Length: 301
Ligand code: UTP
Image (cartoon, rainbow, N blue to C red; front, top):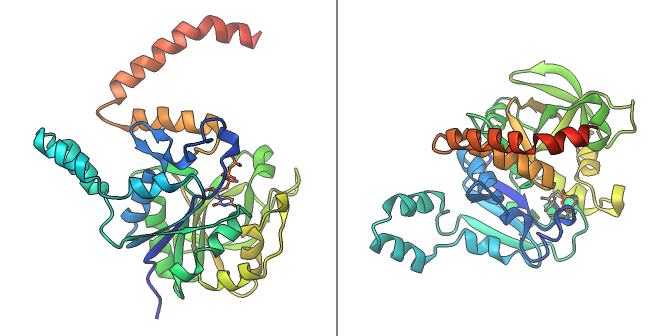
């Protein structure tokens, strides 16, 4: 019988060096896109997909993530006394229930594969969702929800992918595309950062996975790979020899909030997506483009 995907893992132990000095004391997952921290978008996506338990693999300087998902009695009480019921109910809607979250520490940032392995005891012997909190997504229906629906038809392992410019493929993990099945396709191989011109497709892995627990025993013996880190893709390649992997072609937008450009793009895109903000924001953006036109003109030469 197919086991339900009940748990999600969020690896948040990375150092965020691309975002220094902002991330010296603040975890990059706590930087805000409009008015929510990045990590909240990813947890909301998982919740919308029916996930019941949220597992965070954290590191030093990340304790504030745990505080963010805790009840803030004084704040809730003050909001209630001041009659700010809209703000209070929004906070309560986003609040996980007692016992719905778990936190473990990676201790040493040895790479994404190692961070995932650190969640093995908390996940146990069941399939799990893996969401990279750097990547946030925008679409009517959540990416993970579509993936869970595909999983319910195919079982095994699912990876979400999106198209990239073929000239950019060497920056990503790329999958090979096989036959179409249900709402997805069979993955025929994976390669992390292929050399220019060698990528099997332009479909890149966008940070959302459903994996079987067998990945943990593989990660246990996984050698260090690119960047001298334990790479998840290397372990998935070994698992792919034993179990099928299916691709889900996500059609929404993905923002890489681990880089300043992607983070700013996400802020603008989510402000434009919000009904209460988009008119004002559109005016602000047009005004800024007009003001900066001389500078942009000079930069274009
Ligand atoms: P990244 O390589 O994008 O994150 O890892 P990073 O190391 O934090 O960022 P830079 O490159 O130094 O700016 C992708 C995801 O894997 C997690 C990160 O937190 C991020 O969500 N990760 C990475 C870990 O949890 N542990 C690690 O050892 C490495």
